[in-house]
Structure formats: structure tokens, C-alpha cells
Length: 291
Image (cartoon, rainbow, N blue to C red; front, side, top):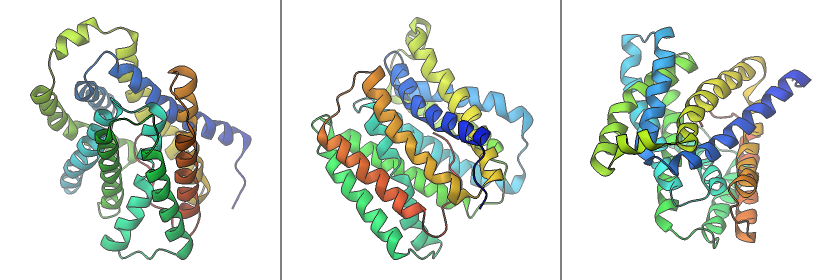
């Protein structure tokens, strides 16, 4: 296993910081735009930028439509709903639970075996969730539920990708965004109000949430991430992604002035540590999709 070059190390740090700031940018966006409407705009922008350069084969169509639901609607849709009443750092940490959940699903659907160390990591991560859920900063249990279901959506999508015909990562990003637009958009029409009025009145915070999440995270950060995964083994690169929730926690405190209590710190350390313990042993799950 070759060491990571200084250039690629700097790219790696740029990516994980970019993912962490994506949560901050989306929190800013939610200050001025309804969550599902903001997400719809993000998907429209991503699809418009990527689809002209990526074709889809007929055999790939059913899988992309299904990913539009599990990843675009369930994962991202419930994530932005949960973010409304949850701070940025906690959101980033809970979403990381998709990794151990995906490992559990893989043992059922793909018949993959979990080693003892991986089982211990999953258990430690779930203990961290229980501690983090008890933080005084979390006053809405519904937000915890939405974020955990969102993580399940990420996990289902990760396992599903292993069964689908191969497709280029950015093509997958663009097409699943396209198929998610009707589901998220209709949900916004049914549950939210005054979308166009709020869009016209939006300032830099609202547009930051849309543009950064589409360009900075979905396209730029993941383009760099996929390039790293082509040059290095996934087991060498993937653990670095666990820096992202810790950085989001610190950014939330520094930029959004969010609180930092003992339960949040201990829960975060257990979740990140448990996931690290699980992913460094044996076969690592498929490449990450979007942040």
C-alpha cells in the first residue's frame, strides 16, 4: 500500500472540509428557504450541470429510479427535514450511521460476513447514538428519528449499488438527482408554502445552501473523492471521511455558535470511533455517494 502523496493529502483534507462545510451551508439555506424546496433546487442544478455529459443505458434506468427514491428522497429529503431542529454537528454525526447500518444490511442481503472487530465497531457506534440522543442540545426526538431513517436510506442505497449495473459516479449523481426531482418537488408542494415568494426574497444564505451543496459538495468534492479512490485502495481513503462529522461539529460551534456539551462530545467520539473500528477491518463498503 503506497503512502498518500502530499498533494493528494491536501486534496483529501479539502474534500473532508468541503463535506463538513456543506452541512453548515445547508443550515444557512434553511434560514431562508423551506427544506424540501431547497433540496429540489439543488437536484435541479446538479441534473442540469451533469446530464448533458452523461448518458444512461436502458438497463441502468430502473436502478437509477430506485436510487432517486432511496438516496434522493429518503436520505436527502429526511436529512433536510431533520436538520431544521438539529444542529449541524449532530446532523453530520447521525448521517455517518449509514455506514454501520449498511454493514448490517449487507450481512442480510449480500450474505457478507462481519468480523468480530466490525461487530464491536457497530455496537460502539450505536452506543454513541444513544448517548448523543440524550444531549440537552437535542430537544426534538422527531429530528433524531428523521436523521436515523435518512441514514438508513444511505445504507440501502449503498447496498443497492452493489447489485446494479456499473455506472460512472458522476453519471449516477446526475441521473438520481433527475429522478428525485418529482418526488421531492411534489412533497414540497404538498407540505410547504410560499416557495417562490421565499426564493425571490432569499439573500446570500438561501443561495449558499443551494449552490454550495450542488457545486461544492455534489460535484466538486465528489469528483476529487472519486479521483482519490482511483489512485488509492478504498480501505486507505475511506477512514479519512470520518473527519467530516468532527469538523462539522467544530464548524457548527465556531460559525453557527452551536452548543457543545459532554453528551455531544462523548457520543460523537463513540460513533466516529466505532465506525473507524468497523471499516478498517475487512472489506470496506462501496464508495460513498453524496454529502
